[in-house]
Each structure stands twice: as C-alpha cells, then as structure tokens.
Amino acid sequence: MCHQMFQDTIVAIATAMQDSAISVIRLSGSDAVKITSNIFKGKDLQKAQTHTINYGHIHDSGQVVDEVLVSIMRGPRSFTVEDVVEINCHGGIFVTNKVLELTLIHGARLAEPGEFSKRAFLNGRIDLAQAESIIDIIHSNNEKALSLAVSGLDGKISKLIRALRENILDIVANIEVNIDYPEYDDIEVLTDKKLLPKCHQIYENMLKIFATAKTGKILKEGIQTAIIGRPNVGKSSLLNALMREEKAIVTDIAGTTRDVVEGQVNVGGLVLNLVDTAGIRETDDVVESIGVKKSRELIEQVELLLLVLNGNEGLTDEDKDLLRLTGHKKRIILVNKSDLTSNLDKSEIAEFIEVSALEDRGMDLLTTKIKDMFEMGEINSKDLTYLSNARHIVKLKEAMDSVESAIKNMKMGLPIDMIELDIKNSWHTLGEIIGEEVTDSLIDELFTKFCLGK
Image (tube, rainbow, N blue to C red; front, side, top):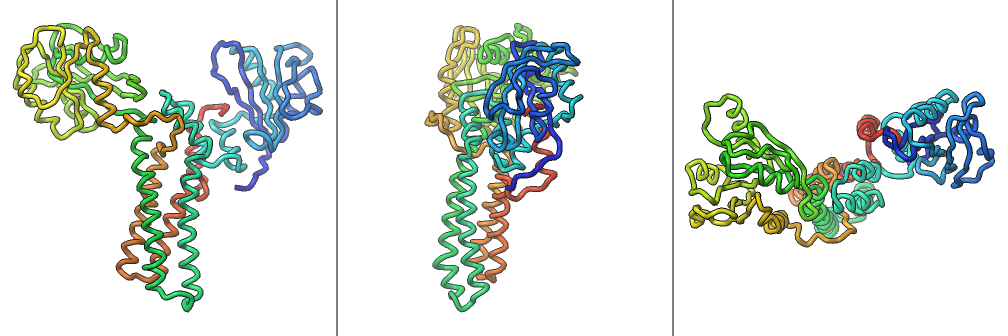
C-alpha cells in the first residue's frame, strides 16, 4: 500500500486517563515537531536527531506547565511512517489535559479512536491483520491469547494468507494463458494435470489453517461455560471456588440464585467465561421462573456445560431430567459435596468427577478434563500462529467455499472462464483479511474499535 500524505497533525493522550507516574501525549504528522517546539523550552527540537529523547519544560505564555521528556521519531522510521512526537509528562489528569490543550491550540487536531494505527495501515507500515492484532494484544487476558496476538502483529498470520494468495495467483496465471492462447494447452489436460491438483492442495492448506482457527478462537476468547443443576446442589459455591472470590451469593435456601451470574476464570491457561444459572426446577415464584427460563435457554447457547449433582443426596427426578436434557451437549458431570457422606448411586451416571466446592477439591481434575475435551493439552508453545480473529475466520471460510466450488465445476467440465471466477473470488476474499482488498467503510469501522491514542 502506497504512502499517503495527510494534511493535518493529530494528537491524543496515549496513556490511561487517571493519576499515575507519567502520561504520554502522542502527535503524528508533518507539523508534529513544529507544534511541540512552540510549547517546549529546552533543546531546539527542530534540530533534534530522530529517535532521541530531549529534556525540557512545557510552557504556556511564559509560565512553566510541566517538566517533560520529549521523544522525536522522524518519518518514515516511525509507527505511522510520519513524524511522531511523544511528550512524557507527569501523570496528573489536569497537567496531562493542559499539555494536550496546548498542542491543540498550536495547530494539532484531536485524533479519532485508532487513527494512529489507521495511518500506519494506510501508509503501508502494517497490514490490516497486524492492525487488528494490536487490539488483540490490548484485550488479551491470558498468556496464550497474548502469544497469538503478538504472532499476528509480527506478521505471521499475514505470511500464511499471502502464501495462499500466491498459490492461487499461480492457478489464475495458468488459466489466463489458456484463455489468451487456447492452442498452448489442451483444456482437459490443463484441468486434470495442473489445476485440479493445485486446487486440491490449496484447499487442504486452507483446511489445516481453518482447523486450527477453532483452537485459536478458544485461546483468544475463552469457552462459553454454564454451570447448571437443580437448586442447592452447590453451583454458586463451585463458581466461587473457580473464581477464588465471593461472586455469587451462597446460602442453604433453595432458589437463591434467581438470575444469571457471570464471571471469567483462567483455568490452566484457558479462559472460561462462566455463567452460574438459576437452579432448574418447577416453581411458582414468578422471578425465579424467569431465571429458570434463562437457564434453559443458556443450555443451547454455551459451548460447555458443568452439570452439578449433589453427592450427599440421591438422584432426583429433576437431576434425571437435566441429564437427559443435556445429553447432546459437551458437558462435564460434577458430583459435588464429596466432603460429605455419599448418598448418590453413581452407577446411574456414565462419567463424572467428584469435587468439593467448599474444600476446593477436584478442581485440578476438572481443568484436565476441560483441556482434553477441547483438545488443548498439547498447546504449550509460546510461538502460536493460529487464526483467532472472527472476521478472518469468516473470510477464510468464504475463500475455502470458492475453491471448493471451483473444484466441483472442474469435475463437471464447466468452461474454464467460469472456473476462473471462483478462483479469483477466493484470491480477493483472502485479500480482505490483510487489507489488500478492502472498502473504506470497513477500514473506518475496524479502527473505531481502537482506543484513543492507539
């Protein structure tokens, strides 16, 4: 992507708006150094070398506002490929806003959310997949999610996509030669000997990437998990044990949890997006019945069910109904209250884990079971290269569908120019992942999800 010359210089606070040790005000544009020089006393910033840190003071009409360090990064050796200045001032909210205000008075424009990254993309410094990885780094909530995001920012995802596009372009070139010079190669020979094997290989490569994308999405976003069971079996105690905090109200009164309680927990490197639901039973309580209705709906929506039974009591009809109701889902049956006398006939349950939420017993077995169910046991590498962005996964699937359509059409003997449409469509769709084929509206939508100053 070619370098674009933007007419204005943007500015934003790049650090959190709260009292802290330091704050950073970031400027980018052709006048970034000039604007900063107008409010800075110290070394002449206009003559300062690139990639230097300069000590001095910010002033307003002769009055010192703050003691600062100013970093100068001249384009194109900067994140945005433009001149970039970062003013490191003391971290008070008032003084930070005062410095920002002075840069605006002297000609800068307040940046839109994500505009620094947007300029980096439009100026060819990063592609779209790398830009989206910046958001993923900010929002990562476990080590593996961070590794995925860093891998994306390093361009490893982009490299995978570009390799696929190059292979597809090779097929397009073969087709174009046949269309322009029909005597060059017999169409049946071209299809059977060259195009079909290449398309099959590309499809297989896409399939491998798509297969790992499910793993990547789980590592990044976590597993939607619901804790279900009849009232008073210890669902809320289990939630608290997993989260190591009193998130849910725990009492001996059946029906205490009347709504959905949500939380997030890191279990052996995997994030569980936990939902503790109202106990499922027949009830005349209007409020509780709403919670029960929500619980039944959640059973179909989540990826994993933790079905809790009370080991201190025998199986009830409500327990048996839940066992039948959830048989089609990925579930782990937890026999709770293993610290008490066992009165449950375990022969009626095929597979289960005994736990004590009260004494934090059996949680390691639960962690191992979850990893096994989602085939996460072997993922220990810190150098992960999986698609995990939902938009990328959708686009990869669309590209796969186009290649699959091309293969079917070849086997049916359709004209070569019809087959080329599918192949080109796959190439264009993959280009949308890295921003080679993308609309202005999509760019605007994606970068508005960024925070200010990024």
